[in-house]
Image (cartoon, rainbow over all chains, first blue to last red):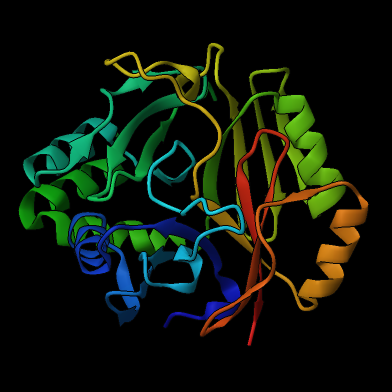
Length: 131
Length: 154
């Protein structure tokens, strides 16, 4: 069912791989591909393969200057939804943390969810364009 | 609301998260994988991704937004300030900024060759090639300091 050759990968650093797998599968509907806690797991949604790397994974090793990779920042996967208000209400009821409230830009409405490590996921509802 | 959206909402209300997620996944198979990066300068970043990493420019809205594609990826570039939704501060005053460790992973067949080519082109790397269980990887920085991972499986 999941053809890895058709997929592309995004890597998130996470504090706790098991907790991250739980969040992405139960809250955001990803399926598990591999799961090797506490180092690494990967989960999929459509053609997105999300790599969840813990502190003990090769991606968690410090840089040559000693800086250690970690979660956070603002770069994020961008998930299109049909009804951002309904999704936001569903996720709030499921206990998900949000960085902001729904806001509207020229392209559509968006909101930022945080995963348990503090990484951000964007939900986006494109603006209706005149026919 | 159109019929499809109404049916989707009805499913969501009837079956909760599971049904809605399953429906999203089906739809997502045809769509590109979108990732948003926050950048200091949309033009400079778009030039970097197109000239160095093989992306093509899909659309650009002056200094405020650009979308670039490479295979199944669509990379959205949003500046730290501007009219776009992604450029707005959070309710607590935090402003979006480039950086961090979240990154797109670009698969390459000759990692060392790519690294040599990009170093000659003046690209900054955060580390040296690291070998892990699944393959070899390295992190480079875009002009705003956002990481991009190059990965050679095997």
